[in-house]
Length: 110
Image 1 (spheres, rainbow, N blue to C red):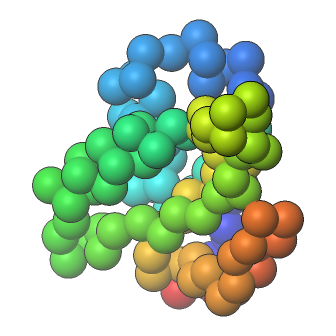
Image 2: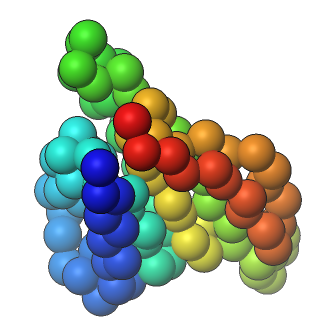
């Protein structure tokens, strides 16, 4: 089985509404793709993505695995959104280690 990786630019993601982003990501992951977002998602968008995913879990789609680098702290220590987000089907991608500068994941063909 092939594993496809979609690398999505920040410009593409920023041109979409929040719901368009989530649908775009979830459709890609449900197709078996690993989606990597430059610029990532806000924490609210990540929560909504998880909620949306939970409504679509079934025998063929067990859910998602999501990891991201946190944003660098800005003025007043406020975080905006992640710098990079990696999202994949839970049956294919498993995050082993994640910290502020490293994401280690195992990707396996089913």
